[in-house]
Length: 230
Image (cartoon, rainbow, N blue to C red; front, side, top):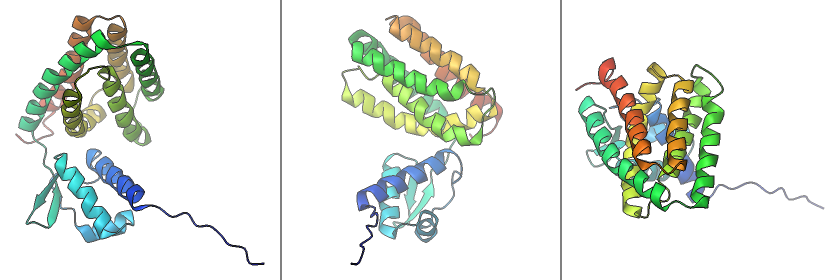
């Protein structure tokens, strides 16, 4: 009797999501540096997927302003600049502080428990070392994003949270440059814990103040480091 071996088949949707996440991660961490071209043929070999999957992934990243389309068919990593950082920082502060205030006012026990969980996962990385390990940085960025999303999760405005999410995806590239050149994991952990404690204490004024200091200090590190063009 012939034995039939089942092979795992990756669905097109799964391949697309995996490829999108991989390219996005490599843009944020600088594997694909700002301003560099992203040839479809090269990416199909690198990520072992079809040209259609690569093109759809890049189109999603264009919508997030992480990739620019040019000459109708070509793609390149969107450039970074000090002016863009300033604009992203001010917009993020404007929107995220308001969302945090509403979230603290509206949050219930489920919001509290999810915030506790998000901080716990983030601290598992931030509390492990006083220096950055390359293999931890990508995971840290994802958990950091999840923590900031948990802070504003109880905000009733879906549009406000959508726009903050778009800004955060841009911010992540700049944040990666800043943390690897300045702040230690333990320093970031202290800042995150302070914001968390103010949020759970239902003190929106203190939470907004701490959030602004946290975001603005990270931006200031890059603005003064001379790592980006004007």
